[in-house]
Length: 114
Image (cartoon, rainbow, N blue to C red):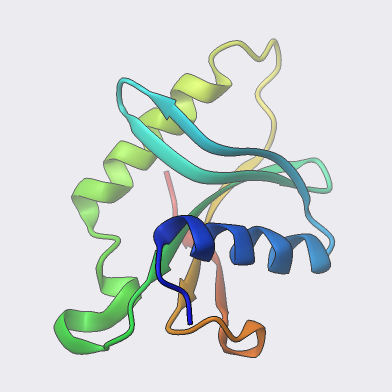
């Protein structure tokens, strides 16, 4: 069973790489916040929020990515991209988990837009 967010992020990164994405960075930090995983899907930069919730109470994993969290993710992604000479296509995905079973991972592409 997954016990920590770090373990969930590692499993999510493994899963996404198995789906053909390329991992660029884990746990990108800046003054605005943190992005769990940054990958590429072809030319598209993918910013991923990993959520582990063992219970669906209070809306479960998806509901925990509220508007406030989305704004923090957008600002953090903008900071990450600020050194790019040309803005790549981007999207925000979510990986939702209830257990350490790869078959139970829910990958939500375009979980929200910026």
